Image (cartoon, rainbow, N blue to C red; front, side):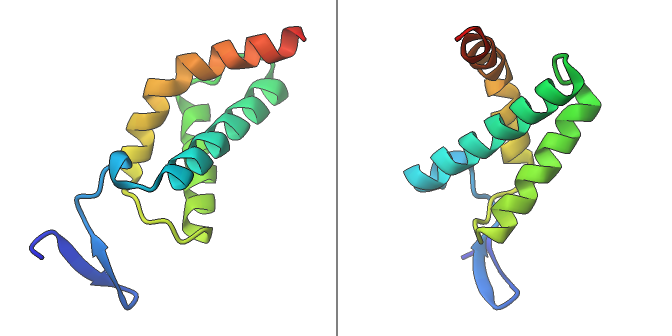
Length: 97
């Protein structure tokens, strides 16, 4: 229990990683990230830059919080950075159709 803390009456694992989430939670977060990526890309008509990435993460972290999923923000940032190229390819493939 050394990696756990009580926050707002809930016992949370403070060293939780993205892989510790349930499959449906990971899927929902990945879809939220892509939707936010797609929205920024469509709105600005360019690939999101570092400032845009911050807005994407902020919007998705709000959805994660609303869904009562607990994951450290740095885990979501790491996951997003790893998937950003795939999101770009997916966006381009969807826009060609």
